[in-house]
Length: 308
Image 1 (tube, rainbow, N blue to C red):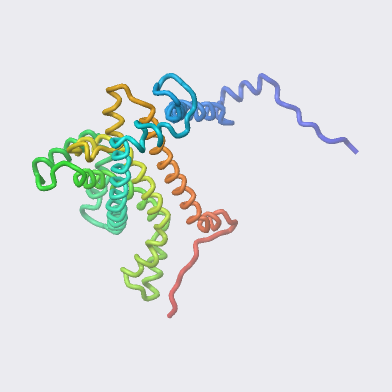
Image 2 (cartoon, rainbow, N blue to C red; image 1 turned 135 degrees about the vertical axis):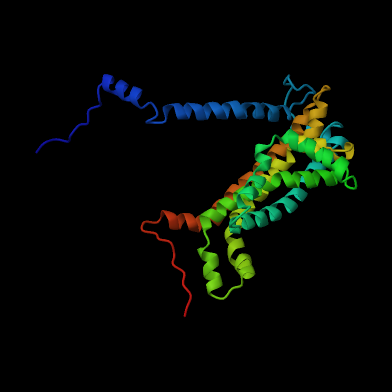
C-alpha cells in the first residue's frame, strides 16, 4: 500500500512565468490598490476627527486630549457658539426637508419612467440624469438666476435652498428606485391585478412594499448628500440665518479656525455614517428572503396564477 501522495510546488521559473502571464490571478495588485485607496481617503478624515478632541486651540499641534471642550463646554464650542449651533440645526432641517420632498417625488418619477413607453421616454431619461452630467456649479448659478430673476417671490433663502436641493437630489432616488424596479420585475404587480386588485391598490399594496429597501436607501443617501452640500446651498443663501455647516466651515477657513470646526465636521460625519450604516443594515434585512431564495439550489421564479 503506497503512502500518501505529496503535492510538489511548481518550480520558481514556472511560478514566475505564470505570474507574468496573469498577475491578477490572486488579486495581488487589487489588494494593494484597495488598501492604498482606503489609506489615502480615510487618513485625512481620521486626522481631522482626532483634532476635534484637541485640548488646545491649535489645529496643527496636538496639546492633549479633551472629549468635550470643543463639543459642549468651551465658549467657542459647537453647543455654545451661536453660529455653529445655528449652522448645525439649519443643516439638519434642510436635509430633512429635502428628503421629505425629493424621495416621494423621485419614487413617483421612477415608477412613471418605468411605465412610460413610446415617444419622449428617452428624453425623460436624459432629463432625469441631467444633474449628473451637468457641473454642480452650473446648476447652482442657474438656480441663483432663476430665484432672483424669474421667481422673485421666492428669492434667496431657506425656501430656495430646499427647492434647489430637492431638484438636485431627485435623481439619486430615481436611479436607486429604477434599479430596484428592474430587479423586481412586473409579474408581482400583474398577478395582483389578475387577482382583482386595481392598478392603484397593486402599486400601494404590492409594488411599494417591494420598493421599500430602495426607498430606505434613498432616504439615507439623499440626507447624507444634502447635509454636506456646499455649492447649491451657498449660492441660494441670502444671509447668516440660512448658513449651513459647509458654508460656515468654508467661511471660517479664511481666518484662524478653532478645533470647534473639526468637532462640527465630526458630528456631521458621525450622523452620515450612522445613517448610511442603518441603510445598509435595513436593506440587507429587507432583502434577506430574496437573497436566500436566489442562493438556494434549484430555486426558480415563483409562478403566480389566478383562479378561474
